[in-house]
Length: 300
Image (cartoon, rainbow, N blue to C red; front, side):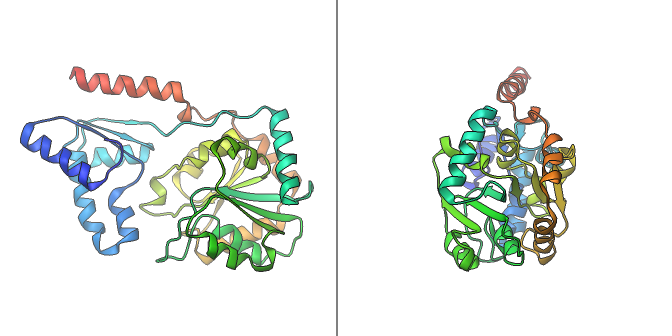
């Protein structure tokens, strides 16, 4: 089963207890903490569910090694990591053409340093946040006219971001909306710094998100929080900002400070440290690993 929805999960647990049917489950989130972040009163119940889903499984495929470790701690006998597939990078010529075209469409000068993010802009009313909020909030306290923000994606947070942008909308802050998958790398080519907002807790610390592989494919230095990923992958191309969440004032202030002081020299130095690829996101390698994992379970 891909995912950890309770309806499918309870069916698996029942089939294991009643019919001794073995199963493998795959997940990209720590279930209990994630549900608890949305419905605080239910987090404990879904943690119990998550433990039994893992404990009774024949194997667990996690989107990160941190989730695999969590499943093994819950009693799952086997685990493997499959982190998601990277996009195929553009050639340098194609990326340069896309950068020029998208910036021209948005009215962004060549000398402007662009921060950006791609993702679903689902508004979390409990914490008053969606992707891009950290960039729009930081930009409000930055006077530099050679700093801009591009936010690609749609969702319930779009109107909140428009209100936050105020006079900067369409000038220093650009809300692009949803774009076709084939244009994702084009918009990333127009950016200089990518944002990867994650909370430093039982939700964000367990995640990679698909964005990290996309940012590497686009050769974008990335700013994130002090999550495990930011240490495990960093070879000099990541900024780690303080603060427990990307909506915390400490994080927003650190983002604004980065926007105020960033230079092209610093950007070029960061970009030079970026890996050509991250092996964790190589599709053929993942297919081989997971095929072997499932075969070993079947053979046992």
